[in-house]
Amino acid sequence: MKDLFDKIYKDKGPLGKWADQAEGYFVFPKLEGPISNRMKFRGKDVITWSVNDYLGLANNPEVRKVDAEAAAEYGSAYPMGARMMSGHTSLHERLQDELASFVHKQSAYLLNFGYQGMVSTIDALVSKADVIVYDVDAHACIIDGVRLHLGQRFTYKHNDMESIEKNLQRATKIAEQTGGGILLISEGVFGMRGEQGKLKEIVELKKKYNFRLFVDDAHGFGTLGKTGAGAGEEQGIQDEIDVYFATFAKAMASTGAFIAADKEIIDYLKYNLRSQMFAKSLQMQLVIGALKRLEMLRTMPELKNKLWENVNALQNGLKDRGFDIGTTQSCVTPVYLKGSIPEAMALVKDLRENYGVFCSIVVYPVIPKGLILLRMIPTASHTLQDVEETLDAFSAIRERLENGTYKRISASVSAAMAGK
Ligand SMILES: Cc1ncc(COP(=O)(O)O)c(C=O)c1O
Image (cartoon, rainbow, N blue to C red):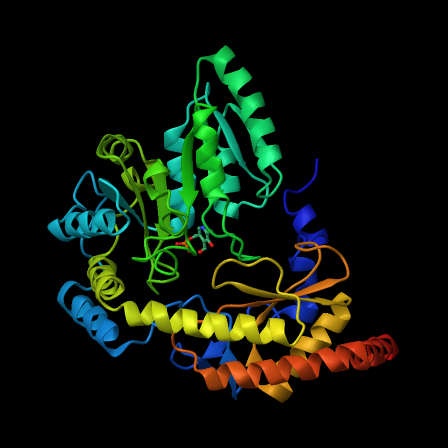
């Protein structure tokens, strides 16, 4: 018999196997200093394009003050216990009411983390007889929630209406046999490529098929829609989203999350959501901090306007210079270039060291072989100067990619390593 750890000693996993070359630089980099448009990386100032602080609230003085005062008043212990037992307060309730009204739903319930809350919500919404239909590009928290499901599940091709309909037909057949229902799960905004889920078209299918729609709007909440209520509001179908989910980890620059739906559905989830029944309640400091952030989302439209000024300047500037930014319909700004993984590493190093621009890279197997994806997150704290400097840097690195500079650099690094 094998030792359980044998496989771990031999294979560090699809990402872990790159650790020797990538750790500390391409993965687990240490960005230092206050969270803002410019931070420090290895002692150098860099324009930061990889922090999901959409509205620039992370280091807002008023937000910091409220966070600090709440921590001083309550510490990090309060309230002790799970919501149902001893971890419930009026402030938790108030935050839920305000969140529900912000996303135009009857009721809301807090989750400690988006990831864990999403897994648990899927688990609570379906039973064995039900069928789940979901986008193949769904976030890991959706995939992991679906993994808990004991019944049937189908993935559809990313945002592909024909595939959605085909899978709804398959799901309908099965649900008719098992006596269950159908849960369709999409993201409001797909976080890698920035496309919005085709919620409007999906909702149209409700006329033909009997299903409930659950939307993970992590990137749409606070950034899309007239009032910031997200992708559903942007597409004019917020009322048709049966269960709405968003995290505090992006536009709210905090920790925590929530689901919102009709009161009867939330009342059910309150009593059946295992991540909240069997885990300690959201800390007071996070609840009070979220109330402050939500007030700012409601009363300071200038934050979202500034965010979009930067998004438009960056996305239009990239397009004007001939960059391929795919089909984004949100703040998430992907830049696709052609090159190998070693070229991508040399390019990103150049960008960081010589141009002071920090963004994340995504390579195969997350995207097809031979493509490099530089993923940029504009925020309200960026300036138009940041955008201009970044556009110039991108033009320069593209030239060096195309004239073979990074190929030569990566070849000489490999040769030096081989000779060592
Ligand atoms: C689409 C999506 N859903 C859920 C989550 C998880 O949220 P949290 O960070 O609050 O766990 C994320 C990432 O933060 C996300 O991008």
